[in-house]
Length: 200
Image 1 (cartoon, helix red, strand yellow):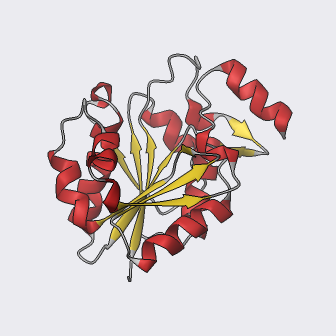
Image 2: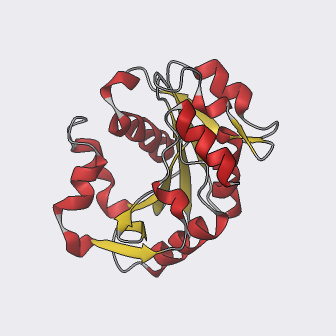
């Protein structure tokens, strides 16, 4: 397998947080910068960042010279799958030889670089078109989707979500056990962010 793109989803309204999550800082790095860095370190190319109502804040939170294709979702209220579709179409339109995408969420900043690396390694083995991390029996993010399910993702109703594609046929999914609670740590509220900061 020659090429995996990286898609960072950062189109949420951050209503419960009260401020754009992409711009929050953990260990001296914004959530957006952390998410992008892990995709870079895993060898993902190209990189796409999908933005929404907080487009300007997300762009500002990205590191200088990031090289990502920043792509707004015109209808972010339609949900996470709508943003994934925007990113996927950008990847497919820009690059002809992409074998898959690593889809990361900006509100999962505690994911480790090792987790992304092992997911990419499992995807490159090519046994199934979907690769998900698992921590203590719970599935999380990032998720890898190979080219074989691109059309299915694009055809799936936004309300069903990518989870519907993942659950459609268990035989298509490789679960990778990781010792990383970050894959299931959503940082959606000030209280959740405070807990994460204390845990560092």
